[in-house]
Image (cartoon, rainbow, N blue to C red; front, top):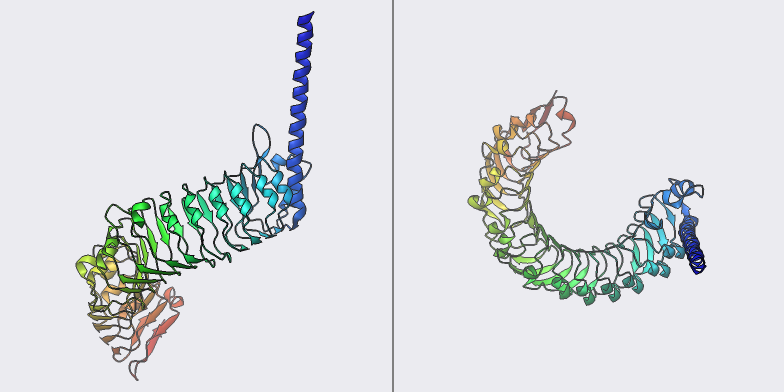
Length: 488
């Protein structure tokens, strides 16, 4: 009798538990559904009619566009409604999606402030609200989302300062706050984010000293703080601390002091270094040549003087670090060093006092696409015979405003089949302009003015293909009797 009673009691207990579980699940699903319907109600424009048509009570919310549910609890775990052109506000009910792990509402036209109820999303790992019209302060409660790995609030109109509470997100790996009118300083507490890999805050209105605590985060791979008003200097040991760093962009700020050098074992992964448009002084450090992975280097618009330039560009893909604002009096570019730069794609060394013969070794770098050395004091003859045979990917050559002399050779140019722009004006070139220009089928711009070219300055035989491409020709201010002749 007792055994039967016990079994009956157990059955009742299990049935009650099952009913309660089902009721809870139904309630939770209803809660998620209500949250999503509240979001739909706040959307005033849905140009693709995704929410208005697809988010229907006729189907399960787990089948709605942009919604993913967990297999176990059938709760909403992912909401991705990015790039739908939606206009509206974020409702507080969205905070009831308590199982949500990923929320992506980027690239829409959402406006208004972030509702405090989002603090309930304790499981959230990804929050992307970038490229919207959200406003107000970045709320301090965002630091309570301690499971976040990825936070992107860029391209909005958030104001105020970066809350120090952001340091509570101890698992954060990416922090993206670019293109907001954020003011104030970068909080030193950011140094507590010891798993941070990417910090991106382009073009805000941040000011004050660059917090050195950032350079203690050994996991950092990208530091991008371009376009602010940050001041101070870079720590000497920056590379020894940030061994994983691949991208450092601090350009267009108010940083000063000397650019730190590096040993051969440091910053070995750095690919992009941009310190342009600051107040750095001193020489270009020889240690830049130790950055074996470096591909792009930007140091223009500073108060730098010449350093051991050639050693710093041995492995570069893009060299755009000597412009009008860098003082390089008496700098020579030597063939044996320039010619060893076997990955270089772009060379821009404009408006300085670079002198001596044109470094012919540069025409041995088969990877080159753009060569621009205008506004210097380069001399000697123009081009080596085999130039285009080796530089078959060359699209632009600008040697204007120099002291280059001699005739324009026809043979080297005829093989530059991808050349779109050739700028040789304001030199000391003489003789008759090359007939080889007619073979440059991709040519769009040709500048030969202000030289000593004689007689008929150009006779081109254009075929039907390239006659449509040549859109600018500046030739005829050398001699009174010069003329341009285009023949079918």
